Length: 207
Image (cartoon, rainbow, N blue to C red; front, side, top):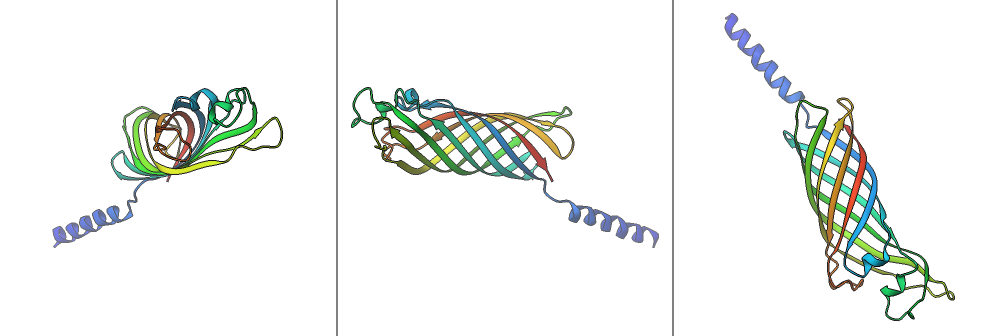
């Protein structure tokens, strides 16, 4: 009788522990620098840019997370070379302002190697939708404004990084990321996909 009672207690504790266990959820925010790569032409008239991101991850297996993320990347135009973007502008025309903006939402996976140290390397990748916009450029000679060009397309990213745990709740991470966006045949007339690299520094909160 005592054995049966002990068995019921053990089973109750086992199922109670499993029921109380919740999947780990993490929230990340980052700032960073962005470096335009291609297509040729655009990379000659764009300065290095900024990257802002916010995302959430749900752990589905030991170290493996499903990640939802939104990002904003902005590259300002080099006013001395921006006339190369438009064949209708006279050679030597300079332009004030202007930027290439990319806003995206992605879904992907991130695998973090769990080890005994405070530094946990990881790899990540994802796909999503990107809105690419070339806007806000004003010709210096007069009030003419370059027409806004924008497009929506699919894209993907690949990343490696390392997460440094401060404690069980907080961590900071460093992440280089490579991004490819399908802008071939779009209103931007790039003739090829848009590619750039971001270097991210951010904070993670784990629940």
